[in-house]
Image (tube, rainbow, N blue to C red; front, top):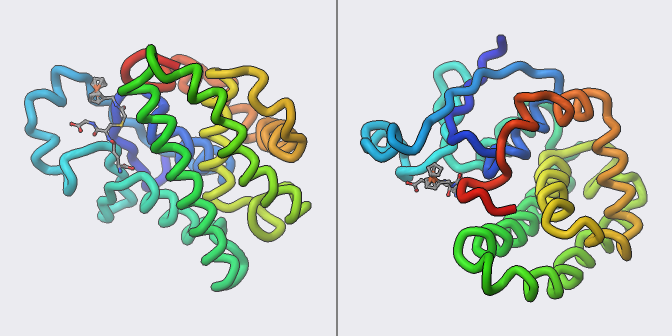
Length: 208
Ligand code: 6SG
């Protein structure tokens, strides 16, 4: 077992990308699963810097905020661009993924019944931005010629969208090929095929 522990609810949610990243980097980690009644007691919540999960431990280092965790893993596992300029671009792409994720999460948790169809109709306006970056870079990655935490973050969010709308990538060849190539990386494939991954719902309210 490596030095890493993820404390989170029994969902993929905000931990999907970091788990896929850890798996692809050949890392092991421990999962501490928190159920709703336990969380509602408030004891754990009161120890969380922003009162929320995920919590990530790397030895004595305790981190909150999923994107800060991705950045930390990017620095440690050489998945943060080859130099400062590439790192800035990786940050930019991760922030773009975050904006996209926030829209997805809002639809799932607040507007699923009334807003799902409109959300799916509007999806190309978000997907085309990532399509353009991948088409321009031509390496199969968002930045440079190897995977960064922004790639894992985008990949995780695209997997969620393929469940929401199985045809949503059909007019985006670069995104389609990106998902296929990431899914085929042996360590990612093994992780996505694992019970540990498959048994977890995507979101905490059962919508997908
Ligand atoms: C929820 O929003 O699962 N954390 C969530 N919710 C509990 O009391 N910016 C940071 C980040 O990137 C966002 C953190 C995130 O890390 S994630 C959290 O801590 C709180 O605020 C989505 C998710 N939701 C499921 C959920 C948790 C509590 C109520 C709904 C567990 C699952 C269902 C019931 C209990 Fe449930």
